[in-house]
Length: 266
Image (cartoon, rainbow, N blue to C red; front, side, top):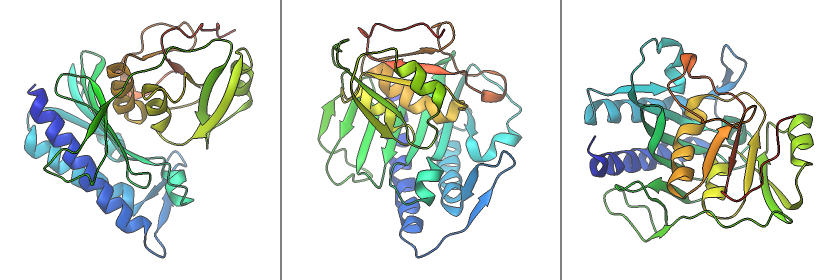
């Protein structure tokens, strides 16, 4: 894979999808339907999916593309593939809370090695550069010109005063019980894959997720986290977290900054 071209393409497609999403977000009303798993889907999800899918197919015709909105048709598998959540945090979008993202990642042999996470309503753009280092770009987000970038790096955590981030829409008692095992200085809630990016940017130390997610929900932000020196592991046994699993379903997980003294699942 030509990583420089990959970075250029996925950054541009995320920005273009973000523009389309915000057009719909700014409308007086938009249609919301339920998918087969009862999760919501909007015309913004579908428009962003069509735009990104077409752009990736044109740029990388020989690479498998897996997207959330076409999940039921994904029967292929490959060691290396692109994986997309065109609008992560649809519940946040519907409630007009702003915590939604466009996620595009490239997976090699089970590892998300490159990714982009764009939060258009928040004006935050995170991605891995051509060398795999994570950055946050600021500026006007021109499609063909990269603005100022700040390297991302997880911070050294203070285990007596941890900063923890958890889901805004999927918080449950099991998650709260696990977080209670730690000495927490501050607790924040965020939607979509932004939670990973807060850890990557040193704005949080720990993000546990004891709930259902799919690979397209996590791959791009996991790449950003890894490129900033962070880690993501399975919750139950703290083993390596991999991609390309049957059905693209994830186990529970923990995303964290190295140095956090992890507590066991039980």
